[in-house]
Amino acid sequence: MEFDLENPLTSLKEYLSDEIPDLFLSESDHIPSENFLRCLKTSADFYVSFREEAISRILQAQYSCNYDPFIPYLAVNYMDRFISRQEIPQGKPWILRLVVISCLSLAAKMKNKHFSISNFQEGETGFTFDTQTINRMELVVLDAMNWRMRSITPLSFVHFFITLFELNDPSSSQPLKDRATEIIFKAQNEIKFLEFKPSIIAASAILVASKERFPSQFPSFERSIYSCEFVNEENLQKCFHALQEMVEMEWHESVSETMSCTGTPLSVLDRHFTGSESETITNGSAVPEIKRRKLNLHSNKW
Image 1 (tube, rainbow, N blue to C red):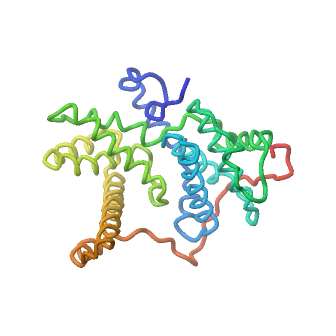
Image 2: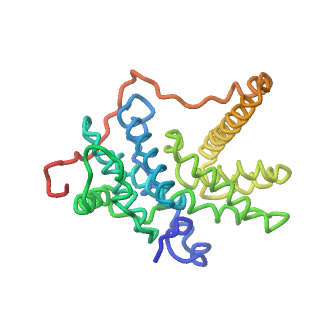
């Protein structure tokens, strides 16, 4: 059966009743470790660069293999959870490619999609990996994730939070869901959102989407989300503002691109958005100790 990221436990009917509390209780088992997040925010340049390049390669696979966006999204989730718990040797660039291939292969299997190892490695220089090597690496990834392949992600909570709204037009729920999903996909690339639980990201994305689509109903939607017993208000507010900033920055960049082609001045836009700046990584800070297992390159797992 194909894994549904929007419904990681069982059927939709059960999801809407008995298993909602289980989702919230279990979501922390499907995110990177807290120590790793603190490290990424300080000076762990290697892991920041590793993650950026890995995501870039995973997204390239989406287009070259013509995957729907759920496969790379799941692959990035696997990759984040893996590198937060497994020490990655430096100076061995081939490891990044092996991790990316293995996470994509696992995600494709969960979605019942064919993953062509040869097509993915076509044009690559240096190391190429056979099926046996990739299968061994998949076991290493699964072991680091405690074999929790049915990831609970922000997508798992979107439907639940939308059901809290009283939409004037019920048919508006699908466009709202689509926009929130789009925001969730984009947020996955940003390191700063790794600190939030999946449910908080989902609730925040829905609020951002509802503010765009239904501004007159937004106060009502906001009250519905904040009154939810499973939501931490402080974290929700922080995540909402971060997502709002991300969306505004993206819009500003898009407009800037368009205007630069036509030669239209951007002074007004620039003044309006000067407060929206992307988060930067501070260099030279102390790196928190991260307890991760070392990759044994000589073990029979490789």
